[in-house]
Length: 212
Image 1 (cartoon, rainbow, N blue to C red):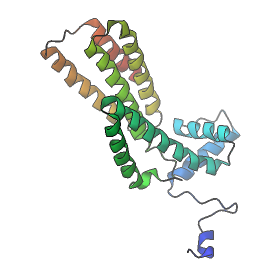
Image 2 (image 1 turned 135 degrees about the vertical axis):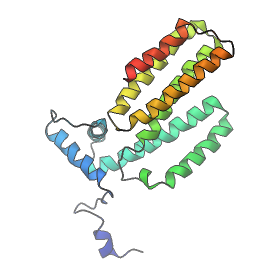
Image 3 (image 1 turned 60 degrees about the vertical axis):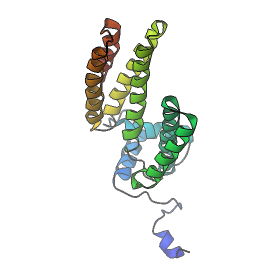
Image 4 (image 1 turned 90 degrees about the vertical axis):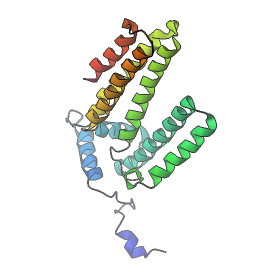
């Protein structure tokens, strides 16, 4: 058992456990400024997301930030499970998700009470990659009556890239990964005999334009 006096050093006057790290306190200060002045300009959407969650949860700000970190982890696990199920089997998705949870648990960057932006660096690239995968899959299956879905998937991917760029300054790293992958994949498809038509290029041009 911990010494009760030692426990007091990790809690505030309301009994709330302190968040560790410097960034959470920076985001908390920025969130308080937004709550006090809705016109206050903050550079990261991360703060606005936490403020929105705080208003919806009706919790004290620090506690809502801690629960927000739980929400991000829940989204990560859920998206990972369904994406793996989409590209493999139900059993494989369970094994892959359990492995993913183990990795999250072993990383201090995803601990409860650390409402950092690290979770977005998995969540956004994963969802964007899933949308692009669905767009390419429809093209490969030559489902002409579903070409409109290809445009929707790429538009959503481009919009998410734009939101991601407002959350983390290193968004361009994954942006280049996506484009390098597409730049390699399209010539391979052409080399294998697939025709390079307007309907093939247009969705990815839309993705590029919305991304920048």
